[in-house]
Amino acid sequence: MSPAERPLSPHLQVYRWQLTSVMSILHRATGIALSVGTILLVSWLGAASDGPEPYAAVQHFLGSWIGLLLLFGWSVLLYYHLCTGIRHLVWDTGYGLELNRVYTGGWAVLGATAALTVVSWVVGLAHWAH
Amino acid sequence: MTEQHTHAPMRSPLGRAIGLGSAKEGVTHWWRQRVSALALVPLTIWFVIGVIGLAGADHATFVAWVRNPMTAIFLILLLIATFYHTALGLQVVIEDYLEREWARLATLLLMRLLCVLFAVRGILAVLKLALGA
Image (tube, rainbow over all chains, first blue to last red):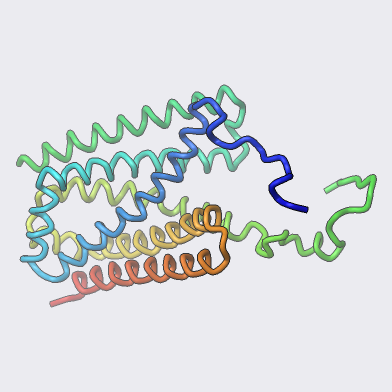
């Protein structure tokens, strides 16, 4: 039996984009990106343990435009993965799996991600300015 | 379970009793991922609040923060939970997309190695800061 003769199930490209699938894909994508982001976290701790000069170099980089952009991206991805992750834990209890609730939850996650990001950066930048 | 079989079950009675399925590990991976996720919810929120408080902090302020025993404990727990959860998550991604057995195994081993390396590096940094003179 040749594998090519068997019918293949429709793959991603034939489906219309919808909130449910996009958010599921993004949960995995943000997880992969955050794996790389944790290396930054370890470098930051490592630099601090190496002494004031390496620490100052990392702080200088994080305070630059590229550093702030990376931190901003990291915070958005982290909040998104955290919120969708909590939603997965809720789903695991068997709650919120009806289609309309999945959509409500999806928009709630996007709203919470935006709100948490904005609040964090307003507070963080205000703190930094002092 | 009050499962009624109108035909012979696909799985042997022993296989059903052990309940580990074709992957031979049952819900172990799934469960570990949920438990580490649950631990990461409060740890992540604690860490983000701590980092926001440290915005623009100098080295002395940072060291004083890590020297607080609670900070050191939570940082080490965060590092363990993060890299454990990362390894479990990346394992699923690698198993989903890498078909060739040797490529899958090599990537899995490399990924595990890197997760352990970064976790140990982070924990040592915290210990050095927390216990150092």
